[in-house]
Image (cartoon, rainbow, N blue to C red; front, side, top):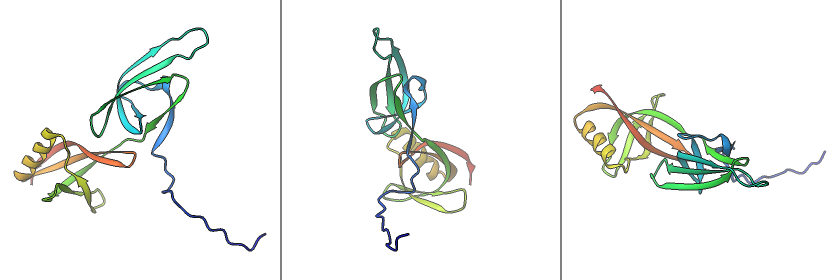
Length: 159
């Protein structure tokens, strides 16, 4: 046994992967896929059969779940694609600050203050109007690959 101490510089987080591999041929419509480093929801999949010795290829058309941009990718169906871990969590809306951040109540009673209001106009108006009328609102927050965004709204009645 050696008496030397080993020092490691840690540049990583807890090690939980933001994605997991899945064979391209098994990814279906309404599933999720990573294209160009962005988490996307698949809207269209088409598979092409190729010649004698080629691979069948999957053509994915997908929409970025955070900014709504349309992305496309073609991958051999036997190869693995990255699939993002997508979580949806509901939080109760407590407050909207002047600078566009929201204050949310988590299930364990803490507050979460690091989320901005959504950029989607109709959802933004619904949240602001509902909050202005004093309704109890629950927002759905979608998170994937270290990004979070408000993606839905539920009205649970007046305060």
